[in-house]
Length: 177
Image 1 (cartoon, helix red, strand yellow):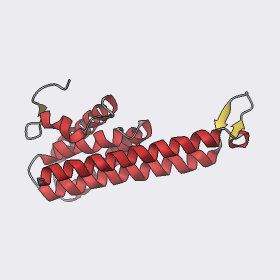
Image 2 (tube, one colour):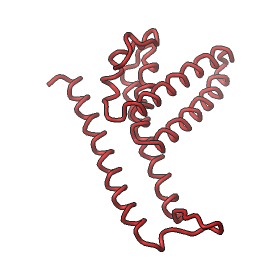
Image 3 (cartoon, rainbow, N blue to C red):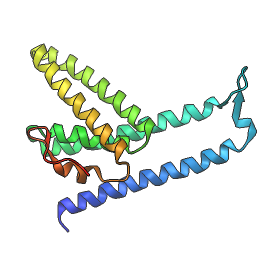
Image 4 (cartoon, rainbow, N blue to C red):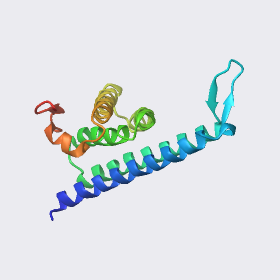
């Protein structure tokens, strides 16, 4: 088994584990919603989840999205090649988006925050603002494209889909089908 095949299998296994955890959570949530005390009735007759649900689900999704993005950042750092960030911005966001709408939102927010931090760090190092802005804009477009890819194709492997992506020139070789 080649190293590349092993990495792909590990990634597929991790994605399968994440989906299974989401399914378990969904089953627990449905069970939880079946109990009347877990919903709060508002003054106008609507039912909302008890704040405990929101307090648990959002941090859990934020943490799993962070783990996905952190893993992709570590992989990118190992490769340490020019323009490889084009690929890993898309791959990380694609994987985050495959964890559902909350994963997409967390990925988007995390990407914006990271680029804001990069703006500050790079300007402190004396980099020209125009150059920093262009790089951040490129990274945000790659993030957005990755999120779109993951939301459109939630069951497909992100690395496999990005085989059609020319990361050096930041363009698609051919469209996905």
